[in-house]
Image (tube, rainbow, N blue to C red; front, side, top):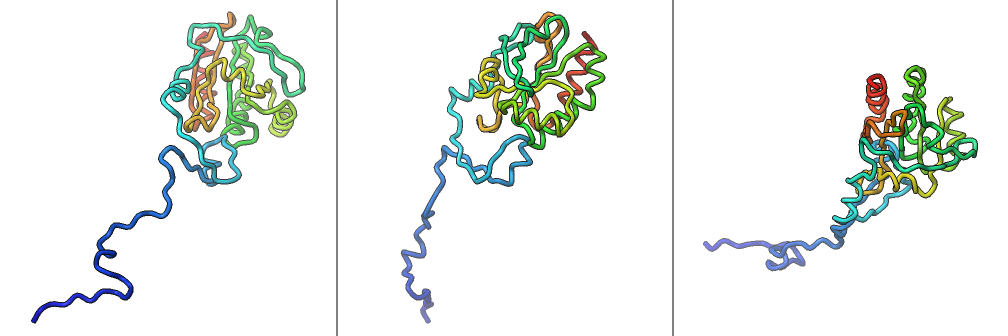
Amino acid sequence: MAATLSLPNNHSLPSLLSPKTPSSQAPPSSLLIPRSLHSQFHGIRLSTPTSLPLASSSSAKSCIFAKVNKGRVPPSFTLKNQDGKPVSLSKFKGKPVVVYFYPADETPGCTKQACAFRDSYEKFKKAGAEVVGISGDDPSSHQAFAKKYRLPFTLLSDEGNKVRKEWGVPADLFGALPGRQTYVLDKNGVVQLIYNNQFQPEKHINETLKLLQSL
């Protein structure tokens, strides 16, 4: 007896054998970042899912190669502190200074890093060093942040990220997340250490203290 094949209603053999074509497909040149990654990335603020273009090869290079190198004097700057007063890098000439760039006030990783600098602040003072934090937040945001967490050091407002760009601080997450990078300058204003670690913010304190104690 010949075998028979029973097909479901409203289906023909060609339709069953044809591969399904997805009705919608995300373009290959975009990256979707859900809200749930807010705490994971220690500094990114996203209220809704956001589609971000992947960096081109030329922009990727700009994220990798910093303009400030060890053994060089970085570009000077004058920025407003948490009290709205202008502060220049040259003010710290004659003593070591730790300049750390961070993504934003009140984000998990940045709060953890700021509090770690606070808790070790006496050690930095003992080494004769100043600590300066820089982000794109405005002075009022810095003031609230410093007051809430009792931060004893200077926070500077780099609105528009001009200084960040001049120093060549590399971004993370295909350029979506401002980089977390720390510089240690000696008393002559020469860079002796560049340390980058986005996801382990407390390590910045250990590395900078280690270097300062050897100067």
